[in-house]
Length: 436
Image (cartoon, rainbow, N blue to C red; front, side, top):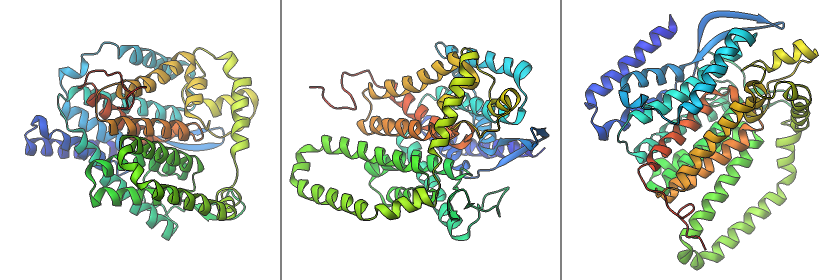
């Protein structure tokens, strides 16, 4: 009933907005921006069924973002969405393997639901953008500033209060107890500390784009708050991803403005030296906060990776063991209790098999290649590379397959830029830089 009520509310909101805006081609962007803002109302809705499995109690839920995407899809619904050609290569195999999982392999229905409704959301997002004939990519990406600001303020409030402050688990603690000392780790809108780190890493690229394109206070504030939010999560993979994003972005900007850059080379050198010295003298503090107090789980993750390749992949190489079934399968067949696989790509291989894994990799690479080889804005190409690499780094050290909001934000941004890039012919440059 709650799901139905929320769907009606979101449909009404989109419908009223569409009627008010008269759905002109140059105003459909506002509905995508509205969808993005609705992700700030991040909570899970119970579907009314409970599961008791392997001495664990869990409840079937869908994310509020899923309801928002369905409502947006209904409003945008048109025949252009279903003029599919190569897309069937991705859709049909996943549909078939999901049906096979549902009827023959699923024991853990809650985790299966979590992954499946994420896949459906990604498909609907693609169809939404496919059904829009015109949109302004700058306005859509600027809409992420509001999401970033809200997430940043929420993260700071969480750290101050020690509570999640989210709908459905408002008073839940953010205290982290797996390190040597008890510490706080903000969870932002994403709901868990690691997912919040990945979420912030994705938003960094978009806010960097907005700062570069708009050069306004709103974009600067959203970038600063996103960096603060990332710091408060104590997520090391996110720190690394953000560092790589900044390096890529700065390197490309320097190259594009190399004539001006040489005039300010001394300031760049001095700034670099100061950063290096700062890291050197604070190395003990960094080690204490990120490894001693935070806890070091890296070795256990590699043990998990080895276990999956030795015990599962050889026997289920082509079709996997079923979406969301890793923990149940491991306990049933090897009497081993384990956490979720801390690698989205490996999880796809283990649970859905080699065929779906290859299609998943191709999908991600195809989006990036199409964008960076197009003639679209070089800054769009740069943030595409940033987002892809950041997601790749974070997703392969966390159980990102269960981070609904992160997956949706990643593919929403990538699809938006992809359909923007399709407007421009292919070029012989890379990131807009001349090849030597």
